[in-house]
Image (spheres, rainbow, N blue to C red):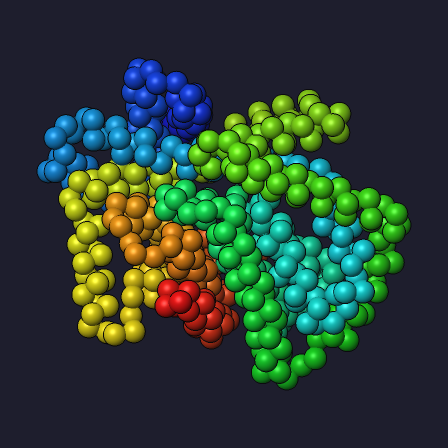
Length: 469
């Protein structure tokens, strides 16, 4: 029975994604109906597979949305279909992004680059900064999958170093770095949906986010210095000794340079192609990214003369990779239903009116000051950055705000940063805890609450300065 449910769920996810890309270029009503039906079946089969206890969030969101559609929408079936199709672009992106990982796993790019840059990583501060910086680049390819991958790689270097001080060093570098990606990395779905929904300039938003991210990494390195002092240790001597051992087994410098240049080309070609196409072609960003990723990954395997390997990876992904994403897709589908229902009620205007009232009551407060805190509160309720971003930007998109959309994007995505750092209920923290064995509360709130507070203040100083200029 479970095997049949899995096959049906996998097939419905595939059909939904396929029809999403197909219907973007066609306007045949029949295919929209089939896509919506496949989305409804994804919810049904995922709910049966996970049972009610593990399916509470999608069930709550979808039932709330359905109730609102029944009460406020003129046509229940039309409203339900609109809601099911609302998150098609997000699901399409989530299905395609893992192809980047296929490319990155083909060669030991990370090992070779770290070996080449060993002289820039031979102290605790340098290594911390290097780990945090490189994790952001790898996150561009692997999303939060970069956390366990980078953790295992760091353990290869620091394999004899254990204890809370070392887990603090490694864990904070990884989690803070990944959190920073949500303000600038275009392959992070929560960032992309914010830019797309709020109609912000992509290049301004990315440059703004990169500047914030760089400041955040420097701030993280400063905090790690004081954290090291708090533990009363100096990690540099141990790091130097471990790096020497690793270098004894490294490839030759020529090979290290070749792999590093190849990785740099892969990064620039993916990022640059997305950026250029978005600038010159009138296609939605959420459609450009999956198209570029698929073409980029296909070209890589063709150039490497491994097209059969890509086909094999595709078959494995269809059989084993879609099912684990069933819950996430169900959340997105149910969020779409709820957002459509909320938009029929005028809920967005109620929220904004409440914020404006608070703004009048507290002179220094405005909506850009409050948005990150709303995202954090939702994070402690277990709602991840993507779910929150879809909900919040969906509401914000229905109203007119007197601020540049780029600042609104930064405000709401900075909330994602804080949420990832503090909430023990979100996937990046859970993945890190599963990797290093510490509790999610320790990896998140305990290690990062002071850093998160200063980070919030730093971003708000910039935002409020831009608002008042």
